[in-house]
Length: 615
Image (tube, rainbow, N blue to C red; front, side):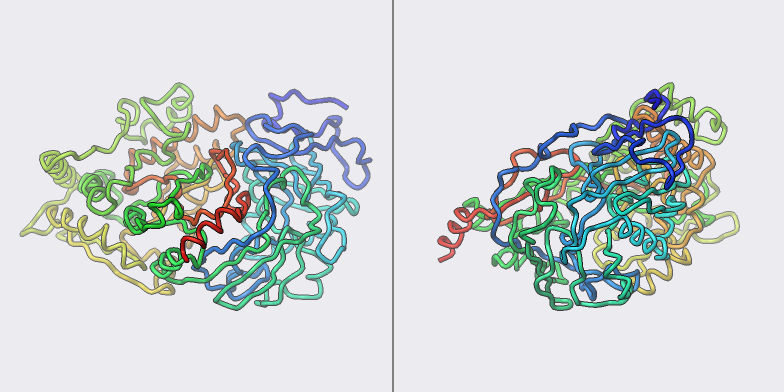
C-alpha cells in the first residue's frame, strides 16, 4: 500500500485510506486493504488520538440523575422524522445517534459515534464507514449499514433536503457493518457536516411505517434517551436509557447525565421568562438584550441562585441582524444609493437607546475570526481579486473598510450630507421634499416584516430616510403572506439574520452566489450576486488548507462590505443564558461548541439549597 503525500490530499485526514493508487472496486476489494481511523479533520490534524478516553471539555465523572426542564417555542405535531409539512418535537435528537460527532474544541474535527472506523480513497471520492460492533437499537437489533443506506435514501427523497445530500451520488452496502458513499465530488467539509447531522433510522422499523406521516407514537431509536411522555403542543419528556449501547464510547463520556429531560412549550417569550422566575423551567437563553439587561435582577439572582452567564458558540459567526435591500430592484442597483442609505443609519444611537450598549457593530461578515478582512488586501487576496479589478470599487484596493462610528450629532450630520451627495451623483434629486429620479419617480421603500418588534429598529431609521426625501413604511405580514412575498421577491427591504456557520463554506453558495439570487426562499434574500463572488465561492469550496480559506473569505468579506448590499447592524455574539443553579458545569468551555446542556449534570446539594430558600 502506498501512502499519498499529505500535501497532495487536500484533506488532512487522520482517517485517510492508505491504499494503492488503483481505483477501489467496492464489494470486490478485501476490506483489510483499507485503513480505518477514528475520525476525520479538514485543514488540520485531529486533536484527539485514537486511544483518547474523553473530550477535554466534559467531566467524565459527572454523576447521573435528576431532571432538566427546558422551554421551547416550537408547537410540534410529530415525533417522526417528518417533512417540511410537519414539525418534529424539540429535543428529539436526544433519542438518536449519528455517524459522527463534531468536536467542540476544533474548527473541523469529527469523531466516530455510530461509526467506529472511517476510510477515504486517495481520490477522496469514496468514504467507507464501518459501524460500531456494539451499536444497537432500543429493541436489541444491531445497527447495520443497511440502516445508514435506508436513512440516506430517505433524506435524498425529501425534496427540501435533496440539495444538501446530492453529494451522495451512490450508496453501496458492502456487508452488515460496512458501507461506501460514492461522492459526486472530492470529500469536503460540507459533506462531513451534513453526515454529522443526519439521523440514522432503523430500516426494519420504518419499512413498515411512513416516516413522513405525523405521529405521536415514539419511534424506535438507538440514542441515549427515549420518549417517556408526550402531549402535542404542550410538552415532551425523555428518559435516559440505562443500557444505552454507546454510554462508554469516548465521545459520550461525561454526557447525557440527566435521568429525565423535559421540554415545556411556551409560545410567548414573556411567559417563558415568568416560568423561569417561578422555577418552572431550569434554563433560558435570552435573545432580547432589554430583558437581559434588567429583567432577571431578582433576589434569587442577588444571592447567586439564579445565574446569568455568557456561553461560547464559535461555530456561529457573522452578522446577527442586518437591514437588507432587495438588490434585484432597479433603485438599488447603484452602489452609491446603497452607500447613501448605509450612511443614514445611526447605529450608535440605536445601540445606546434600544440595546443598552450591549450590541457591537458588525464591521465584517465574519467578525472576530481569522476570516475577517483587516487592513489592505494581502498578496493571497490580490491573486484572487486582481482578475476582477475593473469590476470592483477602487477603494477596495486602497482603503481598509470600516463603518463610520457616529460619536455626536456633527458626525451624523456629515454622514447625511455625504449621503445626499451620493444620491445626487446617482441621479436622484429632492423635488418638493421628495427624492425623485430623472423620470420623476419617487424613491419609496416598503420594509417587509412579520415581527412587530422590527418597528423599534426601523422607525428611527425612517426619520433619517425622510430627511433624504425617501418615504418608507412597514408592511407587516402574517406568516403565509410573508413567505409568499419572499418567494416572489415582493419587498424593497427587510430586517434579517445574517449568521453563518464557521467555517462558512457550506452556506456560501446559497447565500452569496448568483445561482441563489432567483432561487425562491434561499438564504440569498437580498439577491446578492457578482461574477467575482461566484469565483470566490468556487474557490472557497475547493479550498484544502486553512491559509486558502482565510484568503478567500477575507476577499469575500471585502467585496461584500464595499458593495453595501445590506446594512450590517450588530454581530453574532456569545449566547446569553440564565439558569437556576441546580447543576454542575464542566470547568472548561471550548471556543466552538461546549457540551451544553448535555455535558451538565444535576447537583442535589445545590438543588436542595434553592428549595430550602423558597420555603
